[in-house]
Image (tube, rainbow, N blue to C red):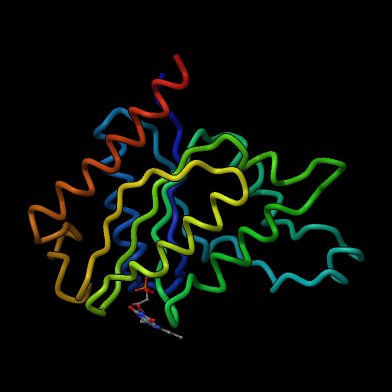
Length: 191
Ligand code: FNR
């Protein structure tokens, strides 16, 4: 069995370091025998969560598409940028919409029992580590088991080479190890 892992970043800008890290992770997941699906949240725009909008129109079309995507995957890998020591509103908003009920089914059920890995990149010296803590907390509260492994790519502007790989070998190995552990954990649960 090749565990299916949904991979995305909490940033939509074209030059996003976290998207770069997520793409790299997707490559490593495939190399470890997993089946990654990299998605760019730029392709799934949603309005800011609004209870009135939800009452009037239900979930945004893109939230429904992502719910189906989530249902079709065993695990998640999220690259979480840091804004003011926090996760991005994009990441929070996306998860908030996905957890809402639709046609009598709670979105929380889609997350419950899944496994995830969280990584981050930032131009700063901490590499977005503080956002990882919050992303972990959020995911844990909605029933996702998050691997304890951490990779925070600091000074991200200089951390990637022309091919988008991590220049620092030890960091590359850390990413490898995280992806491998996620694939192996999911595989052991599937058999
Ligand atoms: C930031 N940035 C930032 N970086 C960091 O390490 N700690 C922080 O607290 C913050 N705070 C912050 C607030 C806001 C509003 C913005 C827009 C940015 C910098 C941030 O890490 C940088 O913009 C990254 O490049 C964002 O991630 P992507 O888009 O490269 O994936």
